[in-house]
Length: 379
Image (tube, rainbow, N blue to C red):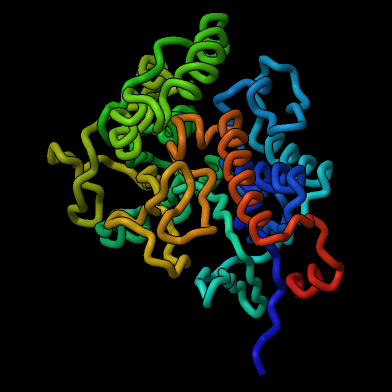
């Protein structure tokens, strides 16, 4: 007997800031949809980040469309405040989020998309994958050769210094996550930070010029309107930005040096169970934190839409090779601000309008689903 599937006009995969933004605009446009999310609660992706994490952007730029962030505009929210805000946003707009639903595959049967999540199956005319490129941890193959006594943690799993052994720490990767964790750990550990220098923004975030330059020039103008796929400068810069690391934003190189953090060349391999640096040194460490980035992690999408690096081929989030399939939340999807909270709303609204227009063409303009349909998807 064929398994019965819950049918929706649009399925949104992911209930982070991208998915909730898409849901908000779909609801306004009268499209019947559901949001599937693997986490137990909306906002759990933020709750799992390290304890001391704060956003780089001030609260004035941390609200999604229709609901300002409830904090002083110049403050920098904690990761838990951001998580609670997203949960409140979903509740305030009564967005149909099914939590605890981990999508395992997306395929297409005839003219409909089929989403499988364990024993549950859903089908839809359109699907929006509202997830970032940062889904699957990247750890070098030689990590397995490290001595078992060395604690190894990927940055996404780091919570606090209590996870580490006494002794030295090697952070492999010198981007923003590595720099922030390095500064925190330097209070009680000898810290080495391995990797190339990605540069730094030339001002402090919490100073007057930092707020002025960050908000008015970078966030509002450069990142949002100038660095886009529609401008010559944006098209030229996009390939490099997709590959390279971002400059240090909050932590400065001089602060790391003052805290005793030692910058080293990249980690090249293992010698006698210890990490080997490119210059031949073997630092005396009992802990390694891999700040080595992520793979897109979209192998569950069983459609021929990916390039050689595992990135989906799209134009501003629209997948021409799979009509009705969209992405929101990817790095530089439309602009440099596409992965930023203040920038995702524009992408979400554009994709929602495209999906609504396709739904209207099919003669469907109903955003309410029956209790039976939602129950079918929930069990």
